[in-house]
Amino acid sequence: MARALALTTEIADEICARLSDGMSLRSICLDEAMPCQTTVFKWLRESETFAQQYARAREAQADALFDEILDIADDGSNDWMERHDDEGGNIGWRENGEALNRSKIRIDARKWMAGKLRPKVYGDKQQIEHSGNITLGAALDELPE
Image 1 (tube, rainbow, N blue to C red):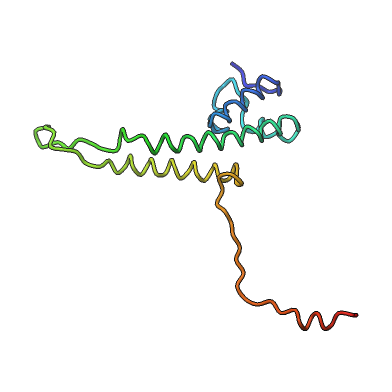
Image 2 (cartoon, rainbow, N blue to C red; image 1 turned 90 degrees about the vertical axis):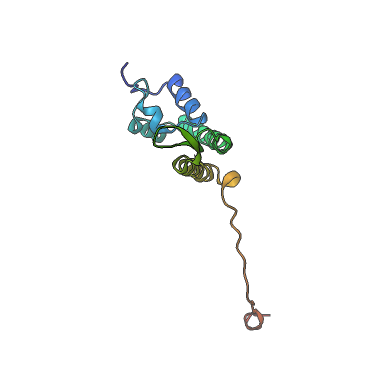
């Protein structure tokens, strides 16, 4: 199938639905039925309606990524590996460090991206503290009466 070159409601809806499900734009655009990323970026510049729909889809994507974090954290299926002796017999289990590290990276990437897509919901809270004194005496004395 040829790549889409014209923005249609169906293609816009499909792109945004896939984004909302947590897919990356890069992955979506690898599908031959979808436009390339350059085309999507062009449509975003040219169509306010599509840009608004896309922005809402990105917010929904943050929610999908946040939900995936629990799935990844709760999935312990690859956390342990069998240990074998020289004859191939099972002699116990050991931690699968590679799988555990990959899970941590996957979680951290999703936390970071969710925080960027919806900073008010998933972003780090910024707090500014001031310590010190503010003296207004001299400034107030200089004000005209």
